[in-house]
Length: 268
Ligand SMILES: [Mg+2]
Image 1 (cartoon, protein in one colour):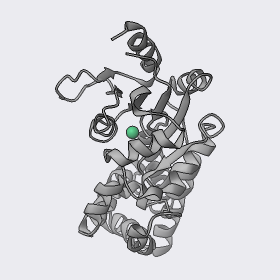
Image 2 (image 1 turned 60 degrees about the vertical axis):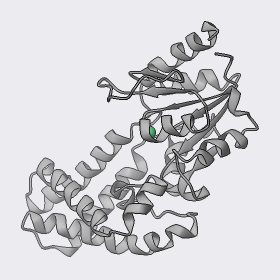
Image 3 (image 1 turned 180 degrees about the horizontal axis):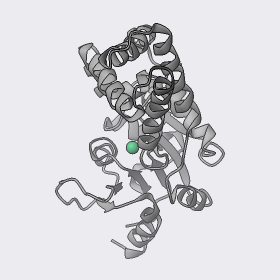
Image 4 (image 1 turned 120 degrees about the vertical axis):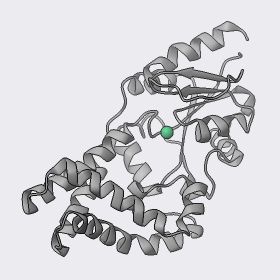
């Protein structure tokens, strides 16, 4: 494979520990509930997840939006979707009542009716989501190495405010100032326009670009839709997908760099 001049980086699960951050946010809210209402924190955290998901999917008009923009109930609990395209106006207007209802439902499920506590839990979740940004092992080395002689661009599905906050507070913004976010541009991975736009943003060409991401259906398919190769971070248990000549699976972010170098030096 010839040298990849443009590297398109996914954010959540590739550079940033999104799953861990969401777990922490639910626990932060649950600790408030434990302190004030005596409900065991882990139990309430689980209950709150279910409640948030239930109300998110109950609004049937959310389904196509979630799919089109790659957004989740976890985002809805904390973000305001600032600078989103007009297609998300209805969602933005709905979010305050969604958050209120979700935390009230969670409390109600454990037998607590307390509006002020629902508000406190919501605040704790939001505060934690806005502060707790952790890079995954190997992410700093990956970006810090590639930035010296490649054009890097972040391509992420999600709310503009939330994703930008992660990029800023993780320190990535100084290294990767070019960020393309689905809710701001109007389309999401795996839409080929998302990958094309990311490449254009840094003045590159598809035939010398590569995608690095952890979600097959978003990152890998997005890349393949543009005939761009992908390094797919699968985690320890690789989901079933047929082998593809343009797809190189690795277990973790820390393995990406040696695999990229091996691909380029292999001359394939
Ligand atoms: Mg990801």
